[in-house]
Image 1 (cartoon, rainbow, N blue to C red):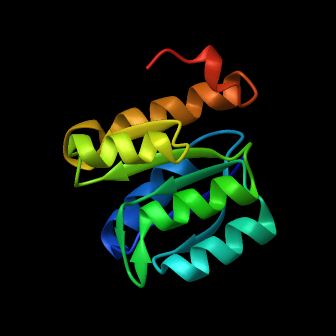
Image 2: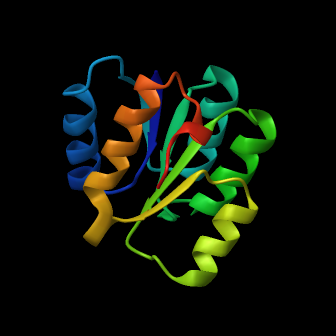
Image 3: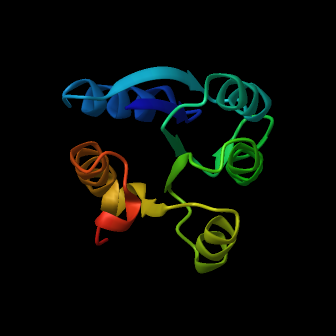
Length: 129
């Protein structure tokens, strides 16, 4: 499965990439911390999964999520953020997020979900989270 990372922190980005490179059947097809660049890449390359932070340069992860899901409805969107406020969660789900995780307490859960997605061929309905 092709994974695109939308994250502006170089440190967090590195941790995400490290976790993904340890997984079989997953490869990182791109990375961006800039909203407009992320949207363009996702629309053009059509990754299977996007890991999206809410706060990024040049806009919001919410913008990326909304535009990416409009361009590619089958995209599996995983929000991984330090801003796990209920209003963000609601807005992300409204815009089509499949999963929403708090970086500080649920970081590893995102990778558990990705491993499960790989094992079930991307079927989000087969995952109980």
